[in-house]
Image (tube, rainbow, N blue to C red):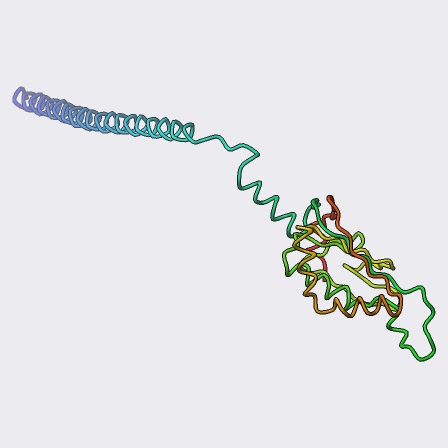
Length: 229
């Protein structure tokens, strides 16, 4: 009986020792894992801090670089050139010295044997004159209150002429901005010049030319230019 109790106590003692040893092993392994994980997290935090510091330095460097750029003001050379192009293209009002040409129907009554077309102004006469002026150096042209632009049309509609879709009636005044002396010289080589003079002298067609120190041309809005057919 005593021997049996001895073995039982011995076995319990061994079991308890095993359990205690196992727990210590588990605790030791857990401690190692936690210590290792802690070390990894600390290393990651340090890396992130280093990255953050590097990014801060880059931001500071870029900020200083931007601050060193020259300040752009509204009166830049680019905006001046843009305004000049808008004037030439007809987007905005244009003023300057130039010439004014007036064309109007004759007040004379056509003779029975005469062609009545000799007594009136035709669309092709205005169209040819406008194209010629733009081709010899005019900065801008307008017919009455209609600015001539890249898509302008000058067509006949019975006794009137339509420019930019607007009905115009005589007298037709062609306003031209440019060097007055140069434009007058160039007009001497206008192919239809002698015809207009002959119609004026023979049939009373109005054809007048005058210079002006200040000619004003209206601008044609961009949205109108883009929507024009």
